[in-house]
Length: 241
Image (cartoon, rainbow, N blue to C red):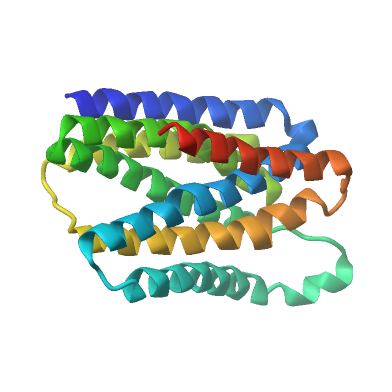
């Protein structure tokens, strides 16, 4: 029952983050700048250190997680560019955004949130202290997950109604993941491969999607400062989890 309760807290954290983004659409470029910094911080101070630490403790060859990282980056790159390939001629007619790219990004984040819930449940299968530590880590970044879901949807010109629907899916995903853990077991190596894949996905959307969009029309030192602040925030958060 405890994993479900903590997953519900993750639901609330995600929801609050998404609603914050919806209420501040006029400052979306600044939110995007901050989000890019948070994503960089999550990769550098949370996911990669966890991968390296686990590889050392479990004496697992690092090849598979690092290959998964590259695959995660390339898979989303290929999906996005394949979608946009049909619209390449539109570049001659001005700046265009494609709603389905935002939906694909938001669905991928929902998949991550689902696995966050799985992580909480599996942590409690090992030990209550491990489960609580994982839950704290999830809560620390789920606010940004909700914010990222909404900003990716709005960035690609989806409606607020659609953004809210994907936000609801993202918020519910940890609860579903935690509930499923009574039926499944993921090996240590499998978890590391997942972490590598997700790090590659995050690296792509942060560097190739969110950060360029943050500066496309509103580039400023303020936005740059918020990117630095987002990375610094995740550094501080990861020191206490």
